[in-house]
Length: 369
Image 1 (cartoon, rainbow, N blue to C red):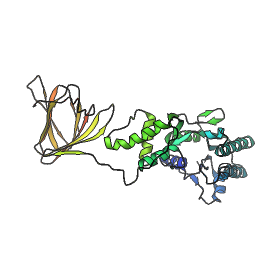
Image 2: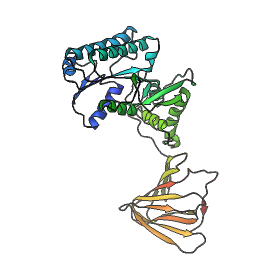
Image 3: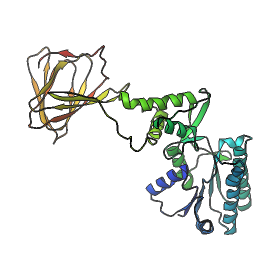
Image 4: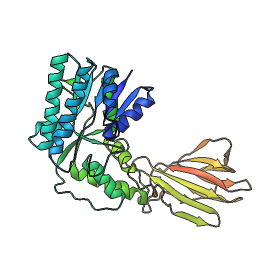
């Protein structure tokens, strides 16, 4: 199947082409503003489907809106007609096509061209009026406010929010791409004359900015955002894509003594925390119990033993563990416990607790196993 993608180096184009490749589509004609213009003839002659994503968002001169969003659309459709190619054509429009501004007028003009083209040729057309699209590979100060905010916060630059109460409707790039591939396969989500992405998120500008700043802070307080909220999950992925390439890493505070070290890795509001414990040879750590706090231990390197004793019993239970056979050991409430390194090298244990450590209510009581 020959697929023509105009605007192939743009935000949506790059994401679409990457996923088309993932799904085994190989005959993709990529056309962008720096592509040899004569190739459009060959592409329009052979195309079985057209994704028309090329357009102008923020030109230096407002006259470029009509030239980029109407003029090239006209050229594309005329070239398809020249070769009697009535393959389906999808066009990337905008919700601003409903507004009377230069950008909206140019998008509406492109839509009207497509409606007329369909009437003349009988070709199937799919017009998507996208709201704000966000995700990886978007351009700050061009594609969306979300891209600008993510870029600026990640790079320690100021942002300007004139009215935090402004409500935004947003679609995520992966949801956009999924819908476009559905359209390619004849399963588009169409409502009356237009097609739309079925998953739309609604948030205020203030909420979005607050979330982005919390993502930046999370590297210091070791927190993980609420991934059960699909919008937060998608926005966090978008934010990470804007990290400076020399700042992917960040330090953790290692609590070091002669026994080894203990380092908090991740904290969540509702799924507890993860830490890394390193024990020197011959060292035993723990000897405490909890009322409600429970843990999971996973030794990933070295060898040792985890001992338990119900505080109302004298019987000691032992579980031998090592990094060559990964086993999770639950630490039930009411059992005092310790972990001892039986090997000749450091033993590394990944520890999960069902709640983040609260110094005002540690729920930890010293009792020897």
